[in-house]
Image (cartoon, rainbow, N blue to C red; front, top):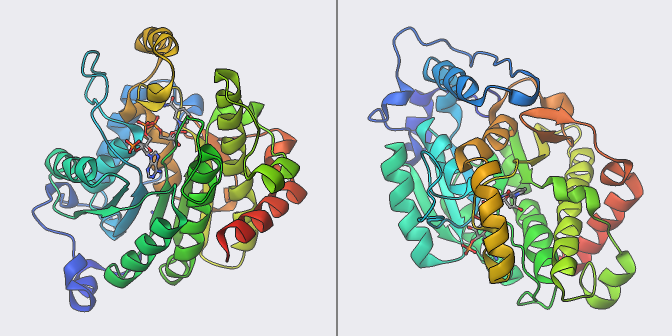
Length: 362
Ligand SMILES: NC(=O)c1ccc[n+]([C@@H]2O[C@H](COP(=O)([O-])OP(=O)(O)OC[C@H]3O[C@@H](n4cnc5c(N)ncnc54)[C@H](OP(=O)(O)O)[C@@H]3O)[C@@H](O)[C@H]2O)c1
């Protein structure tokens, strides 16, 4: 485990408000070691149940996950598929990630756009994790003003940030408050600004990590810089196909952002990763037409994985020790994967960074 180095007693003196609570019994286990055991993930994570049990057992016998003090999980949370609840969980990837990290002793900040759903999620995460170290803060990634005000509030009130999980995503054509294409604005630009505003805190708290939830959909994506300059969007179009196209483009932006961020973070103790969570039963399709939703939901019921399974690669990128040399890389099934040249294109990632800086005014 790489994300925090102070012993818990020191933390109590210098920042008692963030001390992990002894009541969270997963923190304590007789004969616990001082380092997190290195987990060997079988290639492709074949037996996921076994993997999860192995993961849980290893963490429960490890002191070092006490050191995860802050996770920022930029995601909103809601109940999904109440008609077809997936085993063990009926919520999205972000919420499950938050629960899993809170169970392991992290102080988790749920950054959600809806106060009502965020507060409901807060109660769920607290109850399911057994932790009181969970906080809700409002964040609308479709508004650069909201991102700035969230970052200001966060930096004022939270002394540490060890892991930033940029998980939120949307599959919908529209415009952000600032006039950017919705998927470009939410799936990339909001996360870009948020990460940059929190970067100094991440550096102060190093070793620390940024985890960007991308998608295998980045494989069909492209970044049209002319379109970005003229239309402040990745493509022009309003059909269902355009929607999936722009979604893929925005997910390619996640991979390129991670690639460039890793280069800019060289020499610091901050590392970053992008990932595909798998095909997961969530509400991502909620804005599609009824017909598309009906088709997808029926396919998903049989072939898609649960949010708990969907959170495994995020947890791997957030917590697995020994992957620092893979900073900037892309993961799937808890394994580093090769990506097409377009997802590690130096010139495109630099250009995307520069245009994003200009759009965000930083
Ligand atoms: N599910 C899959 O099969 C799959 C596959 C590949 C990649 N992914 C990626 O995984 C991530 C999580 O998606 P999911 O599948 O868990 O979908 P989800 O259940 O729809 O979760 C997406 C979350 O993002 C939040 N969000 C959307 N717009 C936001 C905004 N403007 N500000 C703040 N939060 C906002 C949503 O909040 P609201 O409830 O307020 O809308 C929602 O809670 C996404 O980045 C997605 O692209 C998912």
